[in-house]
Image (tube, rainbow, N blue to C red; front, side, top):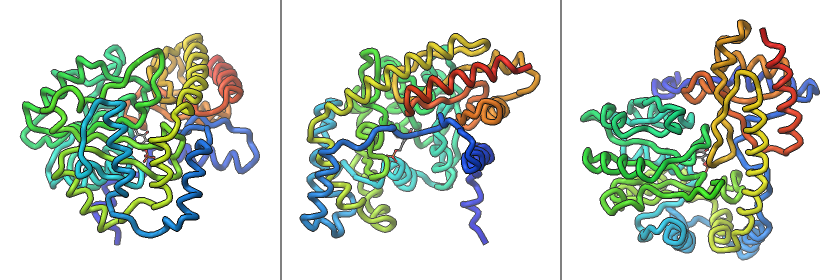
Length: 393
Ligand SMILES: *Cc1c(COP(=O)(O)O)cnc(C)c1O
């Protein structure tokens, strides 16, 4: 018998579509995938070499559950250098990916009946993690006209005496948009006033275009910092998704609880990957600029092409590697497709293009298109999408 807890989490809403795409690929059909959630770049050579060195030096044993001191120091340096934040080692935990840090946070701060405010569109693991930890996700719908930022009055209205936290993610997956400093400041002040945590998922921090500068909400005041649990990692910034290294920085009591939980579940993140992460944070960072320049080219081309399509409009994303076109015009006009899911399914069958419907992220009327794939694929995919859209009736 499966637990009641496991039953709370639904299978991914795009499961049927994913398996159809796989089936088509297995049949040798040339499906182009725009669902990708990881950089299509290889991990930089210096990082791989650091891992090989660690392996050869016998750094193959258990480490402290919350991470090796060297990596905690490298994270502290990074947070100081990039974010102007000062942390002590006991305010840092290294986990098996940012997702694991987020899960540990949920385990550490949530009790049955607690509410967690999640602005939508949202990354799918947030509600799942809240549900798995006996708490209730409270969704607040954000507007495209407001760059999908939760507004301070919306936050105020959603807070109850059960509210434990708000989860922010900027730059955002799926929208690619980020937060203005003024909105972050107001959100921070509200969190302080109501004594709730801000879980700030900043995994796409390094992927910002057009001179946008990342501002960590924790850096806005000491009071806000005291309520913030900052989450980051190397998966997106250093093309290290498979290495499973992420981290959190926050109040000592929260980090201590997370470390205790981690020590009883996974123990330490992989020793070798931790040494590679030290190199990733302390070594040369020019890889990021190169990756960013390539993403930027694709972003412009993709968004311009989408905006040229009938019934489609797309706000220029400020960061990450996703475009989030509004397709409500298309859905209104076409009889054949009634929502983002059926449109995505139609594009899979007719255009041989796999992408994710907005409904998977709690936002009907949108599609998410990842541009973590080659320019050639993007060009081909857009042509196919355009043709399929024109054929809609
Ligand atoms: C990719 C991603 C993560 C998790 O990354 P890890 O590989 O677990 O470090 C966390 N949040 C968002 C929004 C992501 O897209």
